[in-house]
Image (cartoon, rainbow, N blue to C red; front, side, top):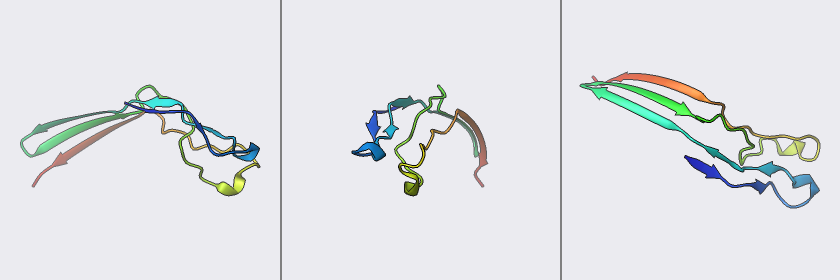
Length: 83
């Protein structure tokens, strides 16, 4: 679990872009047997929404509302073998 506190991009009207103010829960489980492993990952379990601390295109400042959203709820499966 991680919490990112609220913030703004900078000072002034053009930089008054809200960021943070969310919590993200991730979970990973791994089972091993001999040389084999099965891993399950769950990212953003609660499907939180928010603007991350990243500003992808600084040339759009003041022209439009740009945000870098969190990754949506994601489930992953990985199977591996040691040789």
